[in-house]
Image (tube, rainbow, N blue to C red; front, side, top):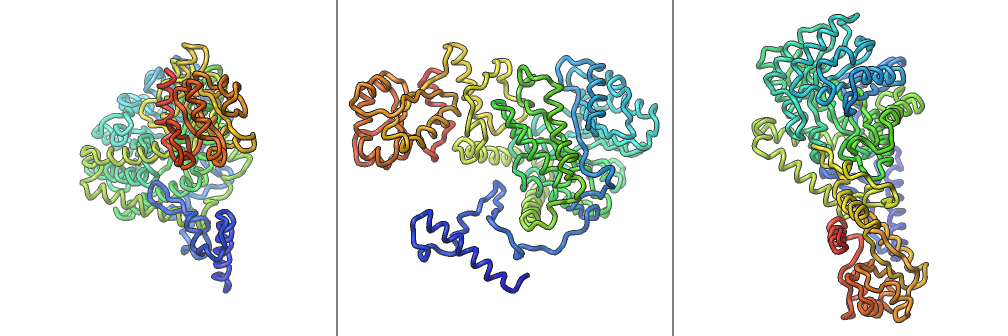
Length: 612
């Protein structure tokens, strides 16, 4: 550490204090040097994220990549295999036959996809497996199947295909049995006994065949924080481990039957830390049971379904890019980028499935082939913030895991309702932040595009098993769309701008954006002066009107504007701003629109007033 480090740190404190002094129009001598602490952001796991990390936050160097505890990655690959796998799921397009799926698989493999997931729970069935995999070199392409209750039959059919192929000893196959995590988000799976039997059988086969998937994405889908996702996944993993050993597998073989999947959101640094922390903690579990070298389980990543929006779904491309970047940099074995319109039943109308899948695939490929991220192992390693966040998150997740263990293990914790209660609480915290617009979702509660083509009624359906961040506001948009279909226009509110444009523009913009997030269109007549015919004509008999102006304008003419609006027959009168400007008058509005309100609840009430 430089000799003058503390002097530099002190200079930074003074600089921050100077900025606060200018913003708050105070003398810098009156601003404490620790004012920088106001810049600290606390995560949903209670971890403080500071605005600056320095050498004072330096840890001793972590073990090298590919070495226990695998914080920096499970392995170091050569240049030909650098980076993470590009995963794509097939079998979820309604009505698509086996021949068509096979054609799309081969096309994807020729165009950058490296890892396959086959979903056999829909129109595609176990009987289609052989045709679907025609021409696929299973010794070169890692494969996972998702077959729900039919996993036993799917495994038998898959083994027959493998045994008839070249190099069966080089395959990498997973059966994705998830009996412990599937009930959390109502996914389909075999029961635990069947999963254990399949794992015992798989352990005796050639190649790398794993039967058990600890699906952390199931927790994420129900609102888990990052630490909860890791902690509950660890608890489920340990529960599987016990069951496998009880069934006769040795500990090392049992560890080699388990893989993990985690959801990656668009919170970039948190997700990098999450994947690093999850690997390290599972390696510690393996160490405790005496087989540290087998603690490097595969770690699949999925762009988190909770962050996908149905409205303005093109923005999901951006969210997915950040999520894929974070998962890859965080060391995931492979990354699956969901199609940008994955939250819309049947996909976005007018958008081909091939286009949606190509964009998802190319998101991964751009990061790998053009940005060359895969050629650096653990690029975040050594960054003070990432290392600190990894350890903080690992501590929080370990605390959750040990709490579940103290409660009797994963199954007992789940059956008692404690797990669901924890997920409900964390989901509610996020829902409240989205509703108050403290957590911004572009295109949803910030910068909505009311001019976009409405979703057809049969596609305005909430995906099963996922509590999406955008769901509350999109329910309001659904009401607006239904109103539009019935009346030919959207629910509307009238703005009452007072004062010149330069003074009312900020609040007219705020009100327009806020109301649009609830599907309410605004009519902005431009500056209005109370007492004029133009004022009366513009707001006459409006069901909802919003007064917009600067605080000095409210003080000077706000009461007069309220009286004029009432006289013109305005039903519900709102003010864009706080109540303080009307504290000295009896002529007050019905409510206020500002940054502190529960916007979702307020907008729901306004839609009801407008008949939507």
